[in-house]
Length: 212
Image 1 (cartoon, one colour):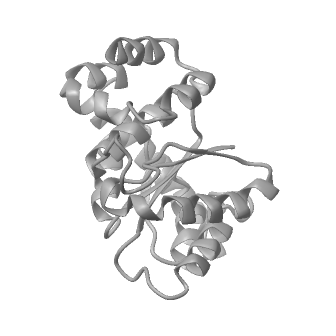
Image 2: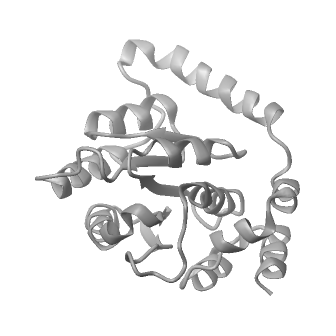
């Protein structure tokens, strides 16, 4: 699985801690981690939580990433920005039980973490345990076990509702404010990671046009 990490400007100073913790947990499971920044508070390419959502949607819809780890001060803004887009199902995760139940009940492909609220002593341990539970076993298996059938049924219903309520993703990219979009894809390592992993030629071509 290709897992992308995205940080916004208010919490960029914590990027290295989050990245190191994530790699420590998921690489032994056979997953790859791609750090799309921001890489620090002084990173010249500043991302807002809205741009986190745009970037997450580009990565998921193009299949350049299978899963996105993002967040902001409270985690709420980045979650809302992600869920605006088709194909992205982002949960708000505060602790390991949130991570486990989101993976097993909702079977999403992105989480948003609060990197300021409650991020104090032992924060790196909470991150570690969150990532362990998030990627613990096969997702979508239900919790508790007596709720497996209705939960899996509801997830399929939600997927169908999202298909009806969202436009084609390429159309969305073209309708977005192009400067906002360009800012979302101008990170230091974006082109290196994205174009090597993107599996959608139309999206790749449009992003190249935006960056030109």
